[in-house]
Length: 289
Length: 336
Image (tube, rainbow over all chains, first blue to last red):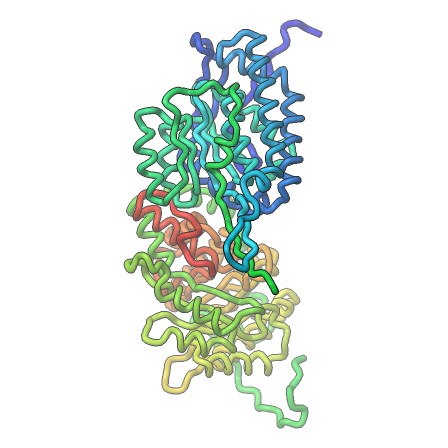
């Protein structure tokens, strides 16, 4: 083989409704490593891409939320399998994007895949842990069930490009919601690869939509959008967070406030990221005599 | 060919054929002459038509122009329900939506008409009293048109008697494709006569060409001319039951036909694309086409209609977006 083979350059695109479109706006931006070296050109999503993604997520919601918890778990586990197959690619991208050494990047990718498996396991246990029969004083069989909130907009963490992304996306999907994610602006490449992973596992089109771009630009449109049921502001610019929360109030969205500082994503998250996107339905069923 | 309902009924005297408008008085003198005329119409350049609509489709309509286009499109909608499962209750709720498409915003214009099956025209008429909204009824064995002429005419008279202001008839595509153009012509003329209303103007006649079954754009042009010569007040693309329904190239050819027909005869005929127009973007593309091909004279609900059901909700969502500045969602418009 000749050593001066031309490089096959990859075109980085969005992941919306199971397909890989360019941004409707035609915009792209340069992705660099922490030292400023050029890595790739990524699509720069606009508000209209976000709008299209919300339409796709809404359309996908009935099927995904209606699937059995067991089936959702299987599908999510399959995602982890495909991620494992892309392990080396994820390691390269995390190392280049976050400026990590090979071993630390590998540890982050391992943790991200393990995190995904962990959330896949939660799908069919949420009902038992968060719901159950309630003792009531009356002739009723009374029970509570966690149900998904709906379409969730996620502003993904800006620093942790894979482990952070998985830590905010997987719990949304595990609960039965569909997601529109705005990825890290400066470190979007692992998210693009995760889109390819989602497209080649059994996740139905539209369940997860990944937009590379600026959370500060798209965030307000998603926060105000009447057809978005919840918004996770984790990756929102600090100075904008309060304004986003105010906009979200217009349509009474569930809001997850951003942490003061990006947390250590390797810590055990518990149920803190599952419960904000679950609604408790309580049924009072009359008991026969 | 056609059967009579009562075999013992005396045969009606065949009146002389109604002649088309000048200067086309003589084209229906015989089958051969009519065929020669229709086939003598200039052929349609299909690639040219497609590239023309592709170019017009890229027009960017924004801000105030978009607001105008959305309101105009809403006022042109023929809000349609043509399901076997239609009930008086469903027609009444559709009529309520026609009067006040967006209850949250009283500045939203009402639609042009409500389009239903003939037996429900009376329900629609009653629900639309004291409004300018017309009741359109489909007739003539819609959607296939496969019935004898006596049945089709009875269908039309029944719909008119029920209160329909507009009749949407289908042409006999079998006869058209077999080249029996005069049969199709005579049938449209007969239906037009059946649209008569005592003491009032006759019900408006919309002629559905069902372009999805006509196969070529040349046939669309011929059928458009045939329907206009026979006295149709509107030419309509499709029933909505056949795919493809309203496409932009078909609409382009029909708009050219009405433009040329008015230039030749002085009579203006309306156009109604129906079926498959679901988004505001599609509707605006049609409006651009009307303005550029037929001209602004056609940009009113009297001369251009959009047959649709789900389109209205999308128009309302876009209207809400323009008004509030943020995206709306399907929870904010009624389910049909």
